[in-house]
Every structure is written in C-alpha cells, then in structure tokens.
Amino acid sequence: MQQQIMLNNRHTYIQIHPGDNVLVALTDLLQGSVVNYKGTELILVNNIAAKHKFALQQLNPGDEIIMYGVLVGRASAFIPKGGGVTVNNIKHASEDFHLSDRKTAWSQPNVTAHQNKEFMGYHRPDGSVGTANYWLVIPLVFCENRNINVLKEALSAKLGFAEPRGYENEVDSLVEMYQTGKSVEEILNADLRLTPDKQPSKKLFSNIDGIKFLNHELGCGGTRADSDALCGLLAGYITHPNVAGATVLSLGCQHAQAQILQAEIAMRDTAFSKPLVILEQQQLGTESRLLHEALKQTFAGLMQVNIQERKPAPLSKLCIGLECGGSDGFSGISANPALGYLSDILVSIGGSVILAEFPELCGVEQDISDRCVNEATAQKFMHLMRTYNARAEADGSGFYANPSPGNIKDGLITDAIKSAGAAKKGGTSPVTAVLDYPEKVTKPGLNLLCTPGSDVESTTAEVAAGANIVLFTTGLGTPTGNPITPVIKLSTNTKLYNKMPDIIDIDCGTIIEGEETIPQAAERILQYVISVASGLTQPKAVKLGQDDFIPWKRGVSL
Image: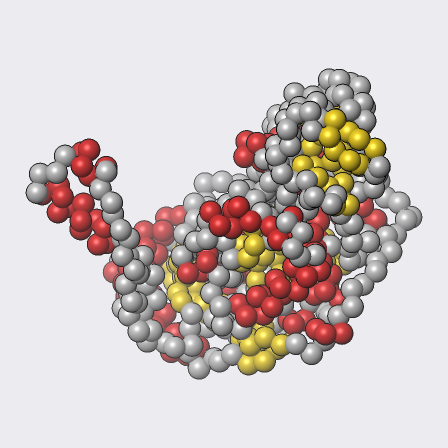
C-alpha cells in the first residue's frame, strides 16, 4: 500500500502513518500553538522547527516512538504531550527481524498510459540499452593515475570533449588586480562576475558523449578482496550499456590483474564484443610507448564506435538507481515516496530499479524481507544486513551512527527515522533479487544492492550494477554526479530548489506545499527521465561535469 499522508487543512503538520505517535511539522510552529488533531486540541510545549517531530501523547523513558508505522526510537527522557522529540530525549531503536511466512501483497499502479512509451537509446549486443554513449579510460591500479591524467589532458580538449567552466577570465581579473597593486581587502571585496562558459570545441565524434577518466586509489596494497571487488566494479562499468568501449592501463605487478578484470567482464557479458584496449606498462617498457599506444588505440576505438546512433527502446529497458544524500525531515514525505511510486510504475512495465544504501534500511528489514519473492532472497538480504551491522559494531560504529550532523539538524535524529524515510524510494513492489557489491542486475523488478549509505560510493556501485539513470533526492543539497550515468537531482523542499538551482533538477517540495500529489509528482519525474534518457535534456550534474567515482573498500563505511 502506498504511503497515505494525513495532512491538516492549513498544511502545518502531517501524520505519516495512522499508527504513528508523533507528528511532523511542515512549517515552524511556536510554543503554545494549538494543533487540531482528529478533533482534539494539542498544545505545543516547545517551539517545533519545520521537519521536526512532536509527541501525540505523553512518553516516558523507554516508551516506543513510532513513525512510518515502525519503531524508530525509544524515549530516553520524559516527553510531554505536545513536546518536541529531540536528540536529548530519544535514542535509536528498531525492531528485530526474522524470516516469516507472511508475504506482503502488492497493489500495482495502473500503467496503461505507459505501456507503449519509449526513449531513444543506444542498443547493445547483450540486449541492454544505454541512455548515453561514453568511452572509458581506466587505471587498474593507482600507480597509473598520472598516465590517465596525461591522456585526459591530451585527448579531451582536442576532440571537443573538454568541459569549459568559464572561470579562467575571473582568474585573469584577479591576476590583473594583483599586478596593478590592489590590496588584499580590495581583492576580497571585488565583484567578480562569472562570465558565461566558453563554447567548447566542436566534437570530432558526434555520436560519442564523451571520454571519461576514472581515477581511483585502489588496485594494490590492500586486501585481495578489495582488489577483486575493484575488478568487478570496473567490469560493471566496461559492460555498462552507457559505455561504447574502454582503454585500461595496468602497471603489471599489482593485485588487480588484467586477467581478473577479463574474467569479471565475462561473468557479466559472456559474449562481450565492445572494443577493449588493455595496455601493461611493465610489458611495453617506456612511459612514452605506453602513452603512444594508448592514444593510437583509443582513437581507433573512437572511430569504430562513432557509428552508433540512438534508436527507440521501450521503458522496460530503463534500470534506475535510487539514491538519497543530504537528506532532511521531508525526504521520506515528498521526494522519496514520489520515487517509490515511479519505481512501482517502472517495475510494472518490466523495468528495473535498484535500492541500495543498506545502513539506511535499518528498522525496515522485516517489511523488506517479507516482500522478497522467495526464502533464499529474504535470507540473503537478512544475512547481508546482519553481517554489515556486525562489522560496523566491531569497529565501534553501528548503523545507529549513520545520521550526519546535517541530517540531525533537519529532523533525522535516529538512523531508524532516516531509514524508514529512505526506504520509501523502493516503493511497494516485490523484491526480485538481492545483490552483494559489486554484482550486476540480471532480473527486472526491484533489486536490493548492498552498498554504504555514503552518496558517492553508493552511486558508483549502483551504476556498476547497471543503472542507466540515477534519481537522487536531497533535502540539504549535494553536488554528486557520475561519469557515465546521468544523475537527476530532486529536492525534497522548494526552499532548497530555489536556493541551489545550479544543482537541482526537479522540485518535490510541491508535495509539501499541497500543490501536487505523490502520483502527480511521479508522473512529472518520469517525463523528465524519458527526456534525459533520450539525450534531449542534460541534468545539472552532467552540465557541471560532476564525475564522482569512489569504489567501496569493503570495510566499514556508513
């Protein structure tokens, strides 16, 4: 059942679930204000900031605090009726979970209007369809990062793939002020008007969206498990539908060997046929020979894939990664449930969605395991959750430590509160598969992927799993992007959308304001997704060149 928000007439508070014993303020509420709740009056004991919670009943130490219909904490101090719930009177708590015979019924949305919709994408031999067309240049080990940077400097601008930012003129102005004797104070007070971005050089290869260079700090010096996982992650990017071909630089002696990478590629695509250049520096000899070979073979590969063009594809070929970062107290009320509704639409027409960030599923494990299509899938999910949390606990930081200072300031004061809202992105459909990092999606429907809650690590992993679009909700603002997959940013509140228009694509604050329902917002988001997937619209993260790429070292990262 989709989330039913009980909204009062003046849009000042909501009850997210009928069983909740707290309400959420939609706007700043003053101490002494009278809240009319279900025909009774509730007097606020404290000032309640927007996005924060206040108690519907008196709560004594140890009493359960229920939100989203689940346990999200226990009172650590007395909370009067109408009193604010804060870090000083609540502690994290969540229900235990177990394998059960109960299976959650799913009420599918009506998708008649979407059955025949299409997007224009790049069709790959393995049957997948890309929403973009990139060439990758990747180091197998951090020792090759410098050579990757040399190739980037040599190729990007000359081939028309550079991303001019327009800040060079501002630096010229600062230099001129310094040379003419301006003081530090005069420079600090100068009004530097950013000039428009310079026009990039015309692309030589018109059907290629860009060359992306994925530097990282792994490949050797760590555990073999980390280097093997890196090879799996890179194989996910090389076989990704948004990638036309790749150049890989290897030193030769590192843990992350080319043979391991090739085996991981074969696991993901048994008939792999994309152009793939693998060069080993210790075998070739001089650095100049390595770079000359890389330039020639990369250029030849670009010539080879430039013939690829966009063609119609059904929406079932979309694989959407669901992500949130810089979350706030409105995330689980507006943007996240809107993505959940969209997820259910896509699943209903045969598409795939990925829900990751396992530390942010703490407290909703029972609901999710009950949605798994079979016992083995539920067991795998529960095992990964318990193992991950135990590893975090062993290092002195369990899932309870997940909320950031920004989360807490804006109302997400326990991990269970944050998790219950984050899980709304996954809608209500059955869980068809549970994937461990860095596995790849092979089944349509809702896929769970074990990743950290860390924005960039999780987004990096979702793309390796096959996400050809990522929908990223934020309540505080975050500039996260990805090198090969368009990342679409959705604000949970209109204030953020107006404050940071350079990084936010879609405003979901319309739900909070009562201007739009969750299904209406989901439809609007879907139309934007189709435009982005067809190459007609560039999200802000793509325009700004936010090519964030951080592989997960399988240690504790929340």
